[in-house]
Length: 275
Image 1: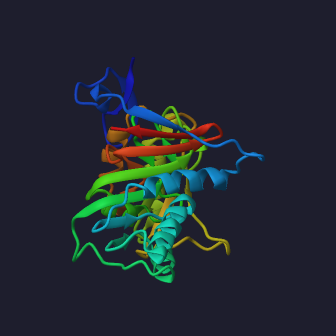
Image 2: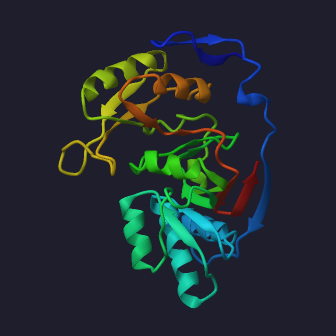
């Protein structure tokens, strides 16, 4: 099967698979857990909560935790707070990946530290916007991709929690945003370059805006350019490398080779997929 690869910094083309691509890695293994019968259908939030609470079971006293950002990660942070309050969990500290996660954690009494003083993280728990069969991810639709990647890249274990709507056959396959964080200076220049880089995928590139119509500003005072693909990426590693070559690009939402486990909650149960 042909795979997508970059032959220049300006566009993509098809070529035979390279021997160093991730496709040669072992396939993830999975374990399923049943969910007790419900009198009513589980909502998407119910499923997110199931996955998050399953991930929190991996936390042990004495751990340094990476606290993710987003609707699913918020359930995990909430559960950690409850366990601390009840005395079922103790002697842990967390490193938040956004200001809103920091605010949530502080309100729950979760002790917080920084990477500067705790550069080794035992376990990070976060959600994902897309999960492919290799457990590679698209993240950052919540706007926290830079801090998420900094924290989760140094975690000994990184557990991803999601509902089954996040599963895709290939990254970008949902048709929803794949974010790229850029500096504010000459952001239009990079928007055009990113769109041109992926033009063979029918890519649309848009500046993310907030509720008031103004440009969305990240916790790091940067902008986000959202990329929308008509076709999924066939080589996420090559895509990430080429995006990162652009001056002014701070980080992208491709989280590749980082997740050690993915917990997916669906209507019929909770599935744990491990590397």
